[in-house]
Image (cartoon, rainbow over all chains, first blue to last red; front, side):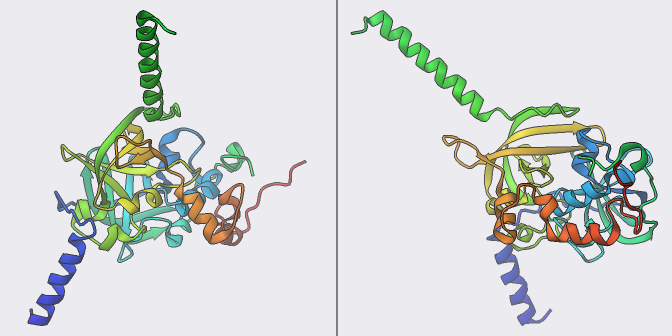
Length: 146
Length: 177
């Protein structure tokens, strides 16, 4: 490390410290492959609507763009809250993620568990089947029917 | 002119009303969500990716990262929702990055995930909670007023126009009879 880069690192750390940088309990997670539907976390747990598949696609787009955390729900009902995809660390109102709402995906990444939440740091999307769970015939368009 | 006894009764009544008003002011609205519990969390606003993995960004990510609270006992609570329909609470929290706040809301300890739905925030316990409604104000600054931001959002409408309301190109709702 050159003196210049040491200075840059010191300035960066000082800047982070002045703006709420409080890393604690940073952990190494478990390497995982998760398969499931991309959904908004709120609708998945609130029970206020049917939050799966085609019926829920539009609502999931709205929630993702509204900044509600996006999760992957696997076949067992586990929710994996996505904090990054590849180098993209924008986990709030990310249009790229909103476009994948209700898609069935398989992802590789790192799983971190803390205080009742499974956080997922996605390295890559190994497969994206698009929307494959057809629920609109039975449930219409959630939550308002249009 | 009140007697001493009447004055004491009147004062006790005032204290009771004050206590009830105060309790009402900090009580989160129930949503009858499975596993919800009204709670006031006290903690420091942090960026989730920084807190969990040490991947930090200035200003907690400037509104682009999910945020949460680190409580005094070290518990980390992700804040998933604010008071605006279909919207999170990052706009309400980002101004407090690295600072201690009180958050009034619903702690939802679903077996699949535990998150907090924040309805009000404050830094001074003597002051009332500020409702978590900044998302709508900021959205309207960018896009103009709308009764339902989600139906008027240009980005959402672009995605839905391209992929359809069901997320499958060409698959459209049946015309209503």
